[in-house]
Length: 280
View 1 (cartoon, rainbow, N blue to C red):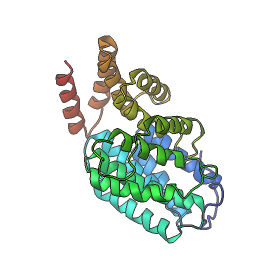
View 2 (cartoon, rainbow, N blue to C red):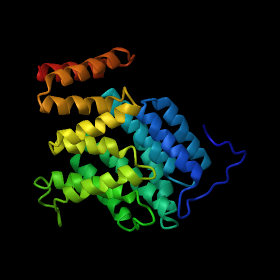
View 3 (cartoon, helix red, strand yellow):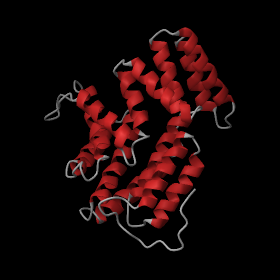
């Protein structure tokens, strides 16, 4: 249920975001996890209308497109994602330094685009965006904006995971344990990133071969969002790696049933069939 207010004055965030944006931002993330992307975009558009001088709504809009494309297994909203990131970056830069939450969302917009680039194998462009984002995050105080641990944690983890490839970068260190610890903290105390960090941690723990952690997080997500495709696939990958055949098969059946019920499912089917052939 949304709070109804007759008039919204254009405002910037003070020490803490307005309660309405916390509510709307987390409602948006909730809809993403329920894979109700159209409804999530409606909420993001409402945030943009209420807060035209903040990059927050554009961060949400870009993040929704990113996760929707992961869900569909095809990049049909790439143009829209870049447009949202460009607009959010422009607004954030105009207000840079006025308050911490503006700067957080400015860095977060860059982070979404950087993550999209990384997922699509564009490591150099991903790193350029990550560097810009990190310069802003590191100017902020985590006591004021605790969610910066999400941004720095994601950056530090993937730099550490790719340390050998990034030998040419100055001051490259493998800080994965600290990064994972910070991201676990965000799972408990994050304002806007408390839920979305689960997606990152499932991917990271798969990469770390910590499969029981993947299973625990995925099952936690599925308790509330029983058809969440990212959690289902993470669970499948963990069971496959542990050679738990009956559990893996049960999850594969759930994934298949979900895909069969989709209209725009060609790429999802192709991905599913490829995985099943590879793991048979």
